[in-house]
Image (tube, rainbow, N blue to C red; front, side, top):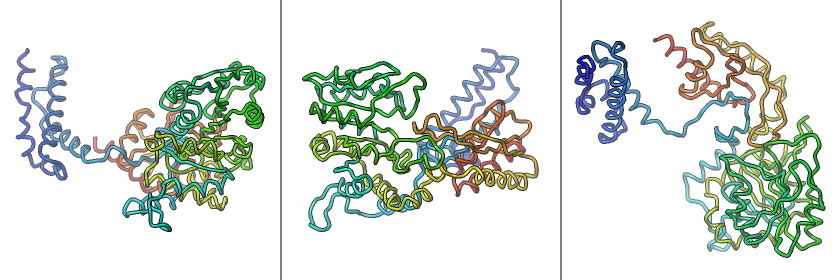
Length: 474
C-alpha cells in the first residue's frame, strides 16, 4: 500500500474517541451507546472504503476530521428519525400507491386517534355484555350504503379476493376472461392469487374479445364460480368486447354458480357527473345480484387500507366460516378510520368535500390555478427570486388503478434553483425535511398543485427553505 493511503487509514479515529467528541455527544440524545457505536463503525467503514478506492493522485494530504464528524452527526440524527415519515405529494398522482394512497379525512383521523389511545368495544357487545364480533361495527353501515345483503372487511383487496375464492371455489374451476388476468401492485397477478386460494383457473375468450357463449361453453361439473375483474389499472381499446356483470349473473343463476366481481378501486360516487370517465360504482355492482363484490377501502373510497366484501348473505356466510378470515381481519385502527370515512357517505356532499381523495379528484381547474398562482407569489416573496416558481399547465392522474385513461387538467409550479439542474433539485427536495416529492418532465422540475393538501403549505415552505439554505451554505 502506498504511504499516503496508509497514513490516511492510520488517521481514522477509534469508535470511543468519536463518541467522546463534543460535536458527536450533542447528537447522541435518545440513542443507546451500543446503537450509536454501531452507527459510528459504519461511518468509519465507509470512510475507509473511500480511502481504499480513491486513486492515488486524488488522495488528500490529511484526513478531513471535521467532515467526518459532520457525517457521523448526520447519521446519528438520521437514526433518530422514523423510517415512515410524512411527505409532500407534488407528483400530480392523487392515489399514489408508493406514497400511502389516500390521505384520511379529518373525521377518520380523529377516530383512529380515539381508538388508539383508549380501550374500545372492538369485540365486545355492549348491549349483551358478552363477546361480540369486530365485523359488526361496519356491516350495518355498509349494507345501508350499498343495499347489499351482507358485508365483511379484511385487511386489503387482494386478501378479499383470495378469501372469497378459497371459500367458494377451492379445488374447483373459476372461469375468467383472458383479458381480465391483470397484475396488481407489487407484481401480484390474478392467476397467482387464484392458485394460492386453491381455485383452478379456466380462462376463456381472447385478450380483446370475450362473449357470454365463451363462459357458457367452459362450464362443467367442476365449475364453481364465474369471475369478472374490473381492469382498473389499464384499458384495452379499439376492437373489443366484454360481458356485462348483469349477463354473467343471469348465466350463473341458470347453472347454479357463484358470480363474483373484483372492482379493484371501489367507488360510491358516480364521478361522470364531474366530467370524468364513467367508473362502475359499488352500488351498481351490488344491484345486479352478484354474489360477491370486492374492492379496496383506500383508493377512490378514501379510507384506510382495507378489503371490503359485499354480496348475498348465503355466499358471505361461507366466507365467515373460513379460518383464513381470522388471519386476514383488520385491526381496530383500520376499523375506526374506515367507519368514520364511510359515515361521510351518508351525506354525499360531505364525502365530496371532506374526503381528500374525492376533493382532489373533483376540484375545479380554476381553483387549482388560483392556488398555484398564490403559491408562486408566496415563494417569490419568501425567497426573493432565489428560488423561481413559474405556473405551468400540467396533467394529473387519479392513480391507484382508478380511471386509468382519465387525464385531470391541472397546474404545476416549475421550480428552478440555479445552479442546480432539475434532477439535482428533485433529489434535494426528496431529501428535505419533510421530503417534497416532485417529477421531472422535459428537463423541467414540476410540483403539481392538485395533489397538495390544505395543510401542506407550511411544510412545503419549510422543505424549500432547507434546500435553499443548504445550497447557500456550500
